[in-house]
Length: 241
Image (tube, rainbow, N blue to C red; front, side):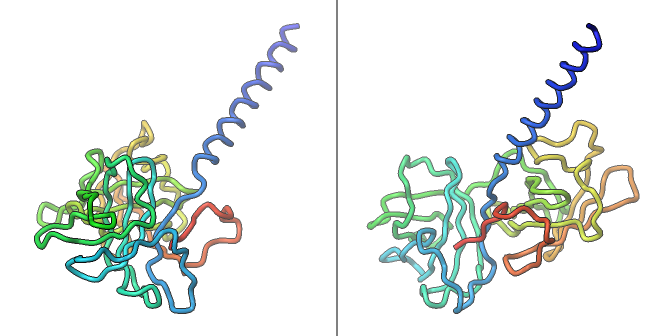
């Protein structure tokens, strides 16, 4: 009788673990990232784009995606027919209570990066950097970093310089090493036994060195044109616009 009870208990534990795994995978689909390059042959999804606000101090077409109250924004070219390279990103907390999708957007103030939305720029958003980010770099070149686990040794890493997003990319460990014991699920949920680490943003990669260890990890920055392995989950990453 005890053997049957134990077998049932083990089965329930396995089913519970499987359900948790599926639930975790569901929460990870999809991750949305901005394209670094939009070629003239591409067909951008205009629902992510904003017309240029009249009286804006410069002609810039913005793309945005809303995630909860976080509005992530990227800057592209001057016309829909030639969006070109992405050349700047910011995050904002949308406290307006409004869906800003498709509204005109632009800069109005000469001395800051506050972004205005609406036909007359009636909604003003202030750039934001998260308080729970990790300090990286050096005292001369300080940055802040957040991260999210995507799949295997793939992470989305975001690096801030003040409120300016200097890196927001899908990354992968260059040599295939498992960085999960160091980074865990995210900066908000690091592994309990992680030794901690120092990191530097080198422009084309983020270099991570665990505390007290000689081994290091080199996280390569990927874009929408980077090849992914054949078994990378379909639709786990969505590139916009």
